[in-house]
Length: 391
Image 1 (tube, helix red, strand yellow):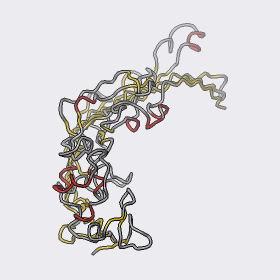
Image 2: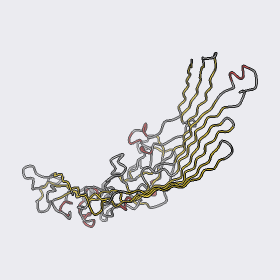
Image 3: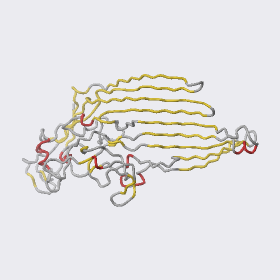
């Protein structure tokens, strides 16, 4: 089963059978066949129904009269998951002939070396990829001495096949594999949504000071206050590094290049400046990465050995706190005063989406916000005061 969409590019309008290079030099049709069609095919032999096996085991233990501790192992395994691989790319050994040795730019001649001449993209959709997830999940619920609290911690790891060709929110369904010469296993790595550690605590605490003792004035003004909070601490999502500059992908229908890993990954977490002098923060050191250069060139990159989503992004340590009290003014009239703060300790929190992930770029590893530093960080500390009358 397949579907095709014809298309013609780099040809003479007066004679579509004649190709034209980027330098506007006429090229004989014998040396540059016109790519007239792209086909999407379904591999019926490798298209089994996707299957997920889920399993878990847990225990609960009561701690005192009003506290419960729970612990569980939760996991799953996915089989027959979808991917899409190009099958009409030029032989890898022929790639060095498709680029200018001085500029590294693509010369437009790859179509003549495709296995199926006259076609461009021959994409095969099939369900042969895998995934797995394992986690330890611990939670505590407690009500003791004026404190109501719920806390949870998860240590997890998820692996699957996905890449930076994702169309956003598709869960990796039928994504192109990054390296069509290696297949889906080249994209096996940390799941795009995998946070290894997540902890949160939410609580309400009745401050006991002057609640039942002291003068009427002290009890009315300093007694009866409550403090509440929501604390979130989580490790970062993984980042998928790419490269900046010319790459063999210019001669191919669909691919993505990752760099070589040449040393230990160092997370800097310190102040830095962009190449044009603007202050920001660094996240990861460039020293552990290098471009994998195509043999015979100095400025054309090919597929590196860094695992898919092989770098951890920045996490969060966020405290939202509130202090509040209700003042009675008669039987039915009440006044509530609240003081709230978000990111109470003003921790600098880098936005993972704002980190430059292009190896070879002068800002690589820094928080740039993709051109706008306003998008490079999460919100700073915010104070909020509020009053409410209830009658």
